[in-house]
Length: 187
Length: 187
DNA sequence: TCTATCATGTAACCAGTTACATGATTTT
DNA sequence: AAAATCATGTAACTGGTTACATGATAGA
Image 1 (cartoon, helix red, strand yellow):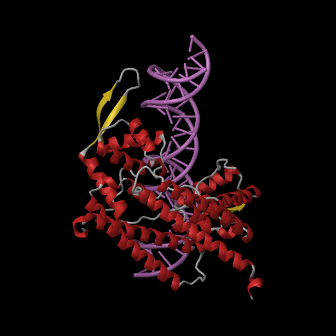
Image 2 (tube, chains in turn purple, yellow, green, red):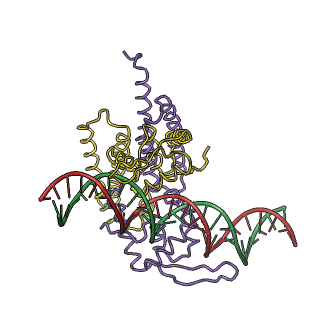
Image 3 (cartoon, chains in turn blue, green, orange, brown):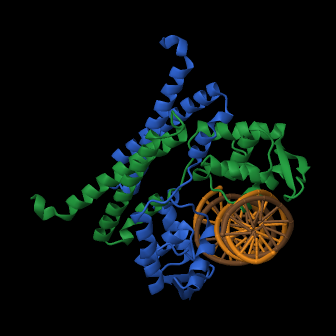
């Protein structure tokens, strides 16, 4: 509980999870991340991937299984989960699922500094955001309706729920500001 | 539009915003961040603060106004916003408020990898999370009710809205899993 | 007056991203 | 067969965090 993770990057969690299904080389890991759209939930870049894989190896969570010289293609090193890695994966997942952790969404920062903007400008910007959010909700819903997978993956439902909450919040805020802005009209 | 920011760390945004009110030395910036509880929305550490201030200076967004040797206390350098800085602040805020940006919440990663956990274990963990979330919502509401500031700062309302959405979502998920788990009971 | 704690800053280290390199296949 | 693109990896750089340093006040 609470001990610092030796490898803390979320991408490492994804790597462990994928290696749970079968041994793989890094590039393949990257491909699957992309193919399954997980890159929308984990920040992914190849450089980071190789770094993370290397640190997982040094930490003993994964081990080099074989080095395939497929002839032609560059040498690829296949990694497999170790017992320690399996344990780390479970522990990490339990932590993430079981307890909420503080996040730092960019919009919260902006809201906390909203005074730095003139009120009318803030209001106008929030209206812009509202439009985009509404459009995004629409897209997600449409995508869900015509989804190849059904029921929709839980993550997607989660994203949608949060997105809708933000949309409602911004809508309310916009209304409030409009009302504040015309106090004379409301006698 | 969309040109890379020379200093991209959110803490830098907070620095610019504070300097809009008046010139200050870094330590004072840190104090205000803490006092106003902004450290819940921007990741803060002194090391990062000094780094960020230095980069803002190199980028020309802030400038050294004076160096006070208050006698006794270590030398403190007071910084002021430049015109470029004021412009950067507005541009950045407009971007953040006006359009939603992709985020990578830790819980989303976990959800996207939920298969890595045995279903009963996942269900149990989600129940734990639900308890904590419910408690947090309660706390926030209570704090809001007895708040020194009224109306509640917008950020807090935002946080509460999102938190409640997550709570509802997890509650729903827990129910679904419970239902799935006892198909025999539902004939 | 010794110890603890506050106020302030610096520097070494570690993590993450970008840009590049190289051989293989496919397209024109 | 030249050009374009894919597959794979490495390395240099930049950003961020931790741990330390030092003088000042306050409490015992």
